[in-house]
Image (cartoon, rainbow, N blue to C red; front, side):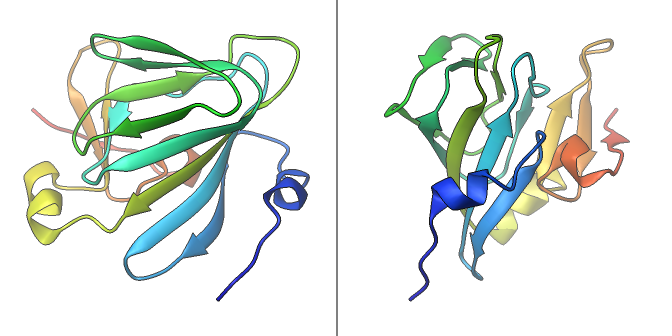
Length: 144
């Protein structure tokens, strides 16, 4: 058994990168922090994800829906569904607790990577071999 105080872990975060809390062969748990004005690119993953709002306010958008994020809200995002989170507010950091299971081999083969982003200029998909997108500091491969 492992124990972690998420409020203490949040104090270490200063920018929008994901802070991994627990990673096992089958499950990942992390904090995702959005300072005021920050946002993600529209993207998807090959495994289901959940996000629980710990602090702050924000917006979670899908291709056809938008939801307000406030403390205590929980959102579930199915595998392969496009979404983006943002913090358009100026008063505090949005902090999400994220969870995801390990994607199946079939899911990985379907999308050719761990994360897909939609290129805003062309509408084409960018494939990332890792789950962190821009946070991982690597570029994606354009899918024709």
